[in-house]
Amino acid sequence: MSPTVFRERGYRFFFFSREEERPHIHVYSGSGEAKFWIEPDIELARNYGFNKIELKSIQKIIEEHRNVIETAWRQHFGN
Image (cartoon, rainbow, N blue to C red; front, side, top):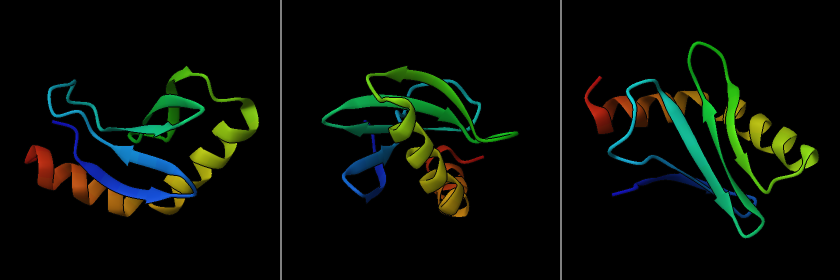
């Protein structure tokens, strides 16, 4: 199961239900997929295909929606 938290600018932001406990968000679009840690700081964990400009844009979106992501994480994982 991988519930979508939100979509913006052609990116899908989502969780994988069976993954590590450290809060993070996955991002997918037709040009790539990435994983960002959201605690303690927003930081790129993995990247498959996004260029530096896309990663910068994605990180900014995550920063703007951090509260939404953290709330969704707690609701989904019960933390």
